[in-house]
Length: 354
Image (cartoon, rainbow, N blue to C red; front, top):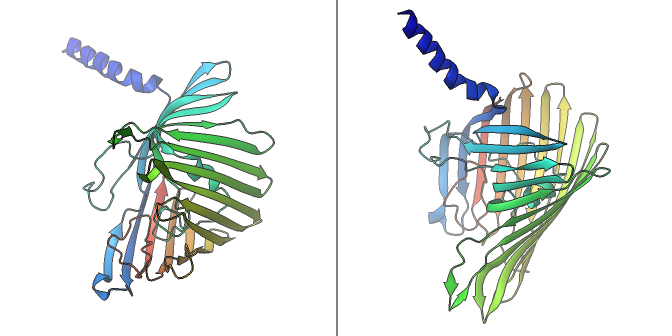
């Protein structure tokens, strides 16, 4: 009997030891809300989406990350992150490591990451934008929405972040095209190049980003039809008040001629102790006079911190699409939005981070 107990203890110790010695951090966010959403006013009334009540998991996530000190100021870093469906038992999100997941080195030279990770255009270009209802349908800075349409997570990518020099940091991401399919006897190359920079000076922060998507549109006459985005942002905090602005320019090369479209945003957040109130506005201009492909979005929100890790919130958001536009919510999205319809939503929720 004693030998069996000793054997059980030995086996348990052998299993636990690797976890005890590893420098692993488990983290995550559980972010759920009760919402009422709709999208009405479509150019074709048959495409209207009438009011729907629902529970949304928003951007709930679970992650594992670690650091291995290699000496002489060098560290190996890694992260595995996955979105989780708190509202439907995971039926929509079954693949693992769908969010920022990478391995890399961090040292005096800067940081290099390999994997599936946010482009530096996304992570650095929006540094100054005030977007307090991020990760809900009130998020005004998402690729499906009105601004930050060039934001993306790059698969099969390598990213570099420089050290910070007097508040200035630069970065570059490159996403490989591993398919390289043949079209008309010519191999395509849909690689992605992303450049970014941030600047911090006291309570002031600014961001800059450029993103190039090679051959985003079909090549015609042997010419590449690329798509590119440029983003600028700036924000300032004074006391319990934060304000921010952002601008984005898209150039989309097409056989019928280049399409150019501008977007901008302004937002503010005010804290009163644990209570916060916020307002954000974003506008997407028409690509050309009479194109009717512009849109704008208003988000009004309030947050209340129950502790450092737990927060409750409420919000109202509305996107107004012109007759040819189909912009929609970026998180817990509303699919099937018809041209000219106006996605609208309100909700209350709770977020816990760990």
